[in-house]
Image (cartoon, rainbow, N blue to C red; front, top):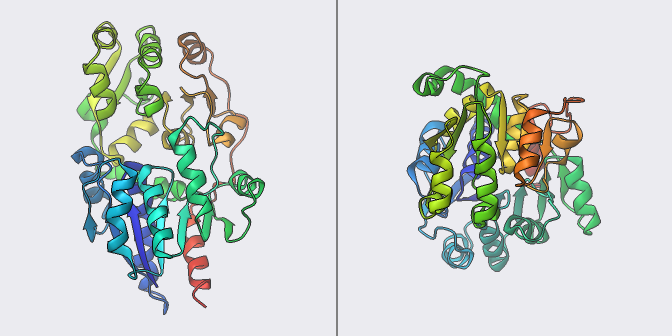
Length: 359
């Protein structure tokens, strides 16, 4: 079985790392050999956003590395001649522009598409990610869903063939790599911070960074939080702040806010695990917060991970300063554990289904 995995952004590197690891383990113990080649679109090209992930997590060296950054058409057109006739499946992850470009290229080459993290919906069509999810799912042959909610979303859209609730690949990755991080990361010592005595924040989503007012509201809230906040600054967010006198001033006048460069995945896992609270606009960080049982405040108006909200681990506040502050001051209490993410066996389930489809 020949699979070409198309990735290009930080969250996809994490998922691909754990799937590739299990593919190698599978090949050592099975008569059905899975040959995986990796195509890196170049969507994330910064060292801390890309190369360090491949190094730390032993992701196989990409067979192809494009330089298309974030343009879907560029990626699609560059991918098509590389994959045409070269694979039995194309595999994509999540909801980035690389995901959609891979789906469009697979469709053009008439190659069956595997979508890992299929069926997620925020129900906000202003998000580019929502469009990417929907269009990728339409073109997928095998749709591997992390939750039953995702399965239900697909059913409502008329997609029922090839749909499987396998559990969450990110949970598999967190279980494995958190153990590695505990052994190798010294980020807490480097930053001279103490477990559960700091908050962790991330701001990167284009919906936030492209709107100066929203970003200013968030930074104004941070200015009024009298607790140390660690903010690994995404390159996109840094560029916006550097180009704004108002945003720069808000940063400078926030004595408890500590800006650091983007960190590796292993360092990020440790920061998430030891934070007293996480404030984020990221989808993946919301979920990782739950995996570590760290309370989370999501600075968006919706989430694709509705289970974390329903179970009381995650609070949705948007970008309103007062709502952010209120959630920090009066955090809600978790109600129950979430079971549908699985028990760390999502990748095993995926590989079993792939092998069954070989016959």
